[in-house]
Amino acid sequence: MKIKRISLNELQLIVHPTVVELSQGDSSKNQATPVLDFLSEQELQILFFRQPLSVLADKKENAYILLERSLPVELLKQHPCSHLCSIYLHVYTEIEAEVVIKTTLLQHAALQYRQFDSIANNLFNRRGNANSLKLSVPTLRQLSTLSNLSATNFRPKKKE
Image (cartoon, rainbow, N blue to C red):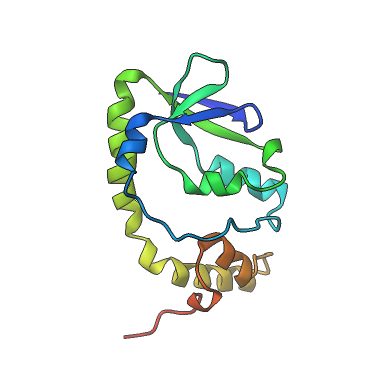
């Protein structure tokens, strides 16, 4: 695997046919694309850097074949300043493609699921801790927009 940094305005992506087939039955909440204008250019760039894409190099310059689905990247690309940002690519070989697709679409997805039931509580606590440290924090509405959760979900976990 090689790591490459590329400007989003130069990047051309198509999805690998196996990824299309494997994700055919995927479901997600149908909602309008959130307005992410509240993210600064610096915050946007940091979020893009935290979301490297697994790809194969295509024959054309700056063209790549996507080996995974990345909803966060698709959402962030809607930001008006996204064309000014860069993203990291993990460039794999044809030989590695099948194992990368299987690992990202199945095992990585399963691993990420462990944190989902506590994400709203964790964000609530982290936001409170950041306020205590006098850090600038996003509003509950902004966190709600990013997470696709109602702002009322951000509350402390009930003690059992």
